Each structure stands twice: as C-alpha cells, then as structure tokens.
Image (cartoon, rainbow, N blue to C red; front, side):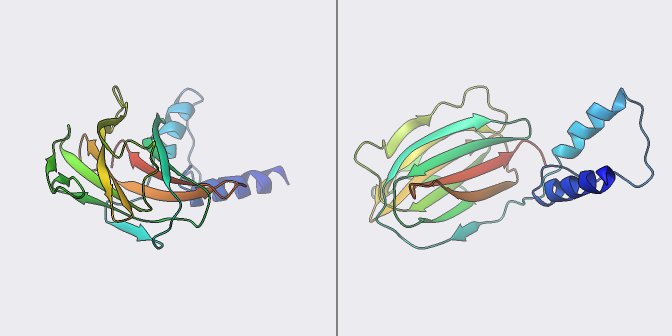
Length: 187
C-alpha cells in the first residue's frame, strides 16, 4: 500500500515538473541518491517560445518582486482584484519603452518582454531601470519597467542567456492575481 502511495505522489510531482521518475531497476548508493534526486528535480521541460493567454482587464498592476529557487528564478507581478489579466511573454531583440519607442538597455545576453494586459496602478513604477533587485540571481540580470500605455503594462527582463520559461496565473481568495514567470537556470 505504501509503495502505491509513493508512486502516486511521484507521478503527481512528475506531472508538475517537480520530479522525474526513476529508471526501472536502477540502484544507487546512499551517497549518490541525494545528488541524483537533485539533478532529476531540475529536469524542466518548459521551452522558450512565446506564451500568451487571456484578455485586457481593468484591474491594476500593483507591484513586482523576484525570488530565487534551486532550479529557476521567479518574477511575480501582482495585479489587483478583478478579472484575471491576459499576458504575452516572449523573447525579443530589444526592450522598447511603451509610448516613447526608446530602446531600454538591459544587462544580459537575452531579453524577455512581459506584456500584462492591465494598466499600471499609480504607485507602480512602470518606467524604472531597476524595477526589482536581482543581483546574484542565476538567470536574471536586470528587471526594468518598460511603461504602461493604452492599458498594457510592460516589464523587461535581462537574462544570462535564452533559457526555458513558464508562465502561471495564480489567484487568491480576494480575487487578486499573481502573474508568475519562472526562468530555468539551465536547459
């Protein structure tokens, strides 16, 4: 019974990209198991193609923050209560400031543009060369506010390299949305 329960948990974690199944009949020494488990748990299959969903909403973009995880760097964009905002996240050659059309120079060898289909709240620094502090992160090099124009708020992320990413929309009980962009440390 315990074996079935463990297998069910591993299957669920594998489906979420949080664990990889062990090879049938594989055996490792007890010293090698933690290292092997760590390597498997970073086996992410996200890809680097454009991701988009949803529609424009009136809820406002309120804040942004970043965090480091063992396998990826995470950017969270908080949006106020209301309908879930749409988004488009894609790699671009340059980050362009909304409204002015000026190029925003960002550190790193790759640039990820995040368009949130929601206007910025008055307190959100939509035009900022240092929107979120990311010094010491593995993938992130710089996060900039690229403006808010005609109901679309743009954020640019300078990255170490073009790396796989995923986008999640999370809701809390108060109907606030968190747009989450995870960028893997490696392919």
